[in-house]
Amino acid sequence: MSTENSIELPEGITTVTQNGLTAYRVQTSLGSGLVYEHGAHVAEWQPAGQDPVLWMSDSSDYADDKPLRGGIPICFPWFGPGRDGQHEPGHGFARLADWKLVQAEVSESGQAHLALELTGDQVADLAGFPSDFTARLDVAMGTILGLEFTVTAGGQQLDYEAALHTYFDVADIEQTMVEGLDGARYLDKVGGGEAQQEGAVNFTMETDRVYFSDSTTRIVDAARGRTLVVEKSNSANTVVWNPWVDKAARMPDFGDREWPAMCCVETVNALDNAVFLQPGESHTMGTAISIA
Ligand code: TA6
Image (cartoon, rainbow, N blue to C red; front, top):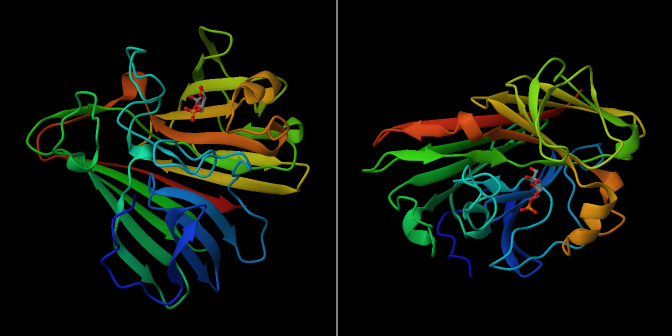
């Protein structure tokens, strides 16, 4: 279960129990959001006057030993099954652990800032990963959603992959395209092998690609008439994913008819772009999401 929160919350941030889990509800003049202690999982963000920007599955699990389906899962210290393809749990342990809220403020303009931390001693099974690291997520919620994921090595060097695995809410994936990856090399996890992106990414089948790109991307949701902008810092990979019909049907925590309503564009460091830290060193990977 969650740890008792020990910091005072400002007006605009409240502790709630949502789906049986401890979470922090943000409600200010600039919009609303929800961050679970479980996985430091940003599950909701809705700027004032806008439709929700993040997608959550109606079939998501809300259990200590399961990841949430949707929002922004933190993948750490490996991506998928890891570089050797052998690591469990998929996408690492960080999204399964209960993080601790260490900072919460709301500015005069209504921008909320929350920070949550995770240390190795809080994790039951590190699968051999050094235990004296500190991971921190800083979330800024206002007219822009900003996330900064910082890892600090303790007395041992660290070698890890990380992702902010963002699920965006779109009106119709078949009328959505992702711009900004033109010319980028990518690993095609569906068809296998590598290829080079030509023009915008369109969706006509299961799509699961690891791009070698640090570029800003734009999710053009034509059916809604909205474009989302995803800027990144210190992230050498972008992953684009939609499970489409068959894979969605195989996932118990993903509704069979939900795949048209979401698009993952993920801020990642994986494979050859894994992060190496010497003892005491830190690395911060960031993403900033806005509506064009
Ligand atoms: O980021 C895309 C991906 O690696 C896909 O291969 C798919 O497995 C997705 O992540 C979801 O993974 P999860 O472990 O959350 O079901």
